[in-house]
Image (cartoon, rainbow, N blue to C red; front, side):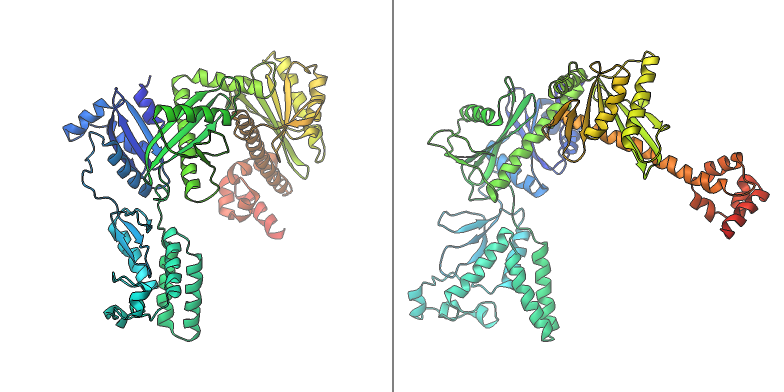
Amino acid sequence: MQSPLELQIITLPDNPGVYQYYDKDGKILYVGKAKNLKKRVSSYFNKIHDTAKTNVLVKKIVTIKHIVVPTETDALLLENNLIKTLQPRYNVLLRDDKTYPWICIKKEPFSRIFSTRNMIKDGSEYFGPYTSFKTVHTILDLIKELYPLRTCNYDLSESNINSGKFKVCLEYHIGNCKGPCEGLEPLEEYQKQVNAIREILKGNFKESLKDFKKVMNTYAQNLQFEEAQKIKEKIEVLENYQSKSTIINPKITNIDVFSIVSDESAAFVNFLQISHGSIIRSHTLEMKKKLDESDEELLELAIVELRERFQLLSKEIIVPFEMDLGENIKITVPQLGDKKQILDLSIRNAKFYRIEQLKQLQIVDPDRHVNRIMAQMQKDLRLPSEPRHIECFDNSNIQGTNPVAACVVFKDGKPSKKDYRHFNVKTVEGPNDFASMTEIVYRRYKRLLDENEPLPQLIIIDGGKGQLSAALKSIDDLGLRGKVAIIGIAKRLEELFYPGDSIPLYLDKKSETLKVIQHLRNEAHRFGITFHRDKRSKSALNSSVESIPGIGEKTMTTLIQHFKSVKRLKLATEKEISAVVGVSKAKKIVDFYKTN
C-alpha cells in the first residue's frame, strides 16, 4: 500500500513544469523546475543524497504541488518568479534586485532598442524576459543587421534636429545608422522599421519575411549572389527564432485566472494569480457534484471561495465563459493572444490535476473506481442494472469473401481477452452484413444458453439501425428480449441506437461511458479484421496450392505452415521448397509456377 506521498509522486505528469515541496504545516520548503516532473521529483526519493541539507529536506516533505508549463524555458522563468515571491527556506534566495533581461523599445522620437534588467514605467515597451543575455545579444545583433537604427542617447526632438544641435557619428559613416540626428532620415521611415522589429519580438515574422524575400529575389535577379545569400541567412535566422515566453507578459498585471474541467461526479477549478506580469501562485480545487450543477454555477462558487481564501483584490478576472460577479470586477473571456494562452495554461493544469486524482483513486481503491464507472454507465445508458459484463460484435468481409465476425468481452469496464471469440459465417452467401449479424448473434447466445453460461448485461452492435435490427431478430428468436439490454453504435457521429427508438442518443464526447463503448468497438474491429486477414491469406494460399497437379492436402498444409503466403512460395528456390516437401514435389511446384 503506497503512502500519500508515494501516490503523489507516481501520478505526476511527464511534462515540463515547476514543483513545490511543503511540510506538514503547509509551509513552502522548496521550488524547483523540471523538464520531466515525474523523473525529477522521483529522483529526490530513490537515493541517499550527498548533502545533509538535501536529505533533511526530503524527510520534511509531506505535500507536492506542481504547475505544468509548455517548455523547459517557461519552467525556468516561472521558477525564478516563485522563488522571489514565496522565498522557500531551502532555495538559494534571490536577495539582490537582479532579474532576467528584457528588450526595451524606448518611448521617444526615433526609438532606441536595447537590453535592460530594470523595467521603468514610462510608457516604453518591454519584451521578455529571456533566460540568458546570450539570447538577448543574438536578437539585438539580428535587429542591428536587419535594420539600421541609432544607438546614441540624444534627445532627437524636432526642435533639436532643426537647430542643427547634433552631428552624425561613426555609425553613420560605416552604414549602421541613417543619420536621423541631422534630419537625414524621416521619422515615418524610422518608425516603420521600429514597427517591423516590434512584430519580430512578438513572434510575428510574416511581413518581415515577405519584405526580405523580395529584397533577396531582387539581388538574385541582378546577379548579386553574395548579397542575396546574406539576406537568405537573415531569413533563416528569422524563421528559426522564437522570441516570446508564454508564461510572462508585462502587459498582463494583477489579474486572476480561473478555469474549470469537469466530469460526471466532480469539477476541478484551477486558479493562477498574475502579479506584475508573473505567475506567483497556482492552486487547484476539487468540487464534488451533488445535483448535476453546471460548470458556470461551480466556477462562480469556486471563484468566491478562492478570492476569500487567498484575500484576492484583483479588479480583472480571466475566465473561459461569461459570468456575473458584480459591478466591481471586470470579466474577460479571451479568444486569442496572451490572455488566451494564460487561460489555456490554467485549463491544462486543471486537466492534469483531474488525471492525477483518477490515477490515485485507481491505485488506492480500484473497486471504487470501477464501481463509479459502472454506476455512471448504468445512468448514461438508462440500463436496468450495471453493465459488469458487456459483449460487442463486429463483421468483416471484402466483397463477400471470407466473411467472419468477432465478439469481444469486457468485464468491469476492462477487456477480458480469454473470453474473446471468432466466428466463421456459415449460412450466408455474398456480402450480406445484416444476415451475418443475425447468424452470429444467434449462435453466440444459443450456445451460452445451452451451456448455462451467464449472459451479459449489455450487448453492443457495431453499426446503425440496420445492424441492430438484424441482431434483434436473434434476440427475439431466443426469447432474450427484455432480459439483455442491446444497443447499436454508428461510427460517423457516435450515435447510440436503442430498439424501437428512431431517435439516437448522443453522449458527451468527454464522457467515460462513451470512452468505454469506443474502446469496445475498436477492440471488436481490431480483433475481427486480424482474423479476416489471416483467413483471406490462407484461403489465397490454399486455392493456389490446390491447383498444382500432384500436390495433396497434407503437402498443402505443410507449405502453408512454412511459407505463410503464395508470394513467398513463388519466390522460393527449388532447393528451399525441397527442404520442406522433398525434391519430386518441389520440382512440380517450381515447374507449375514457371509455366503459369
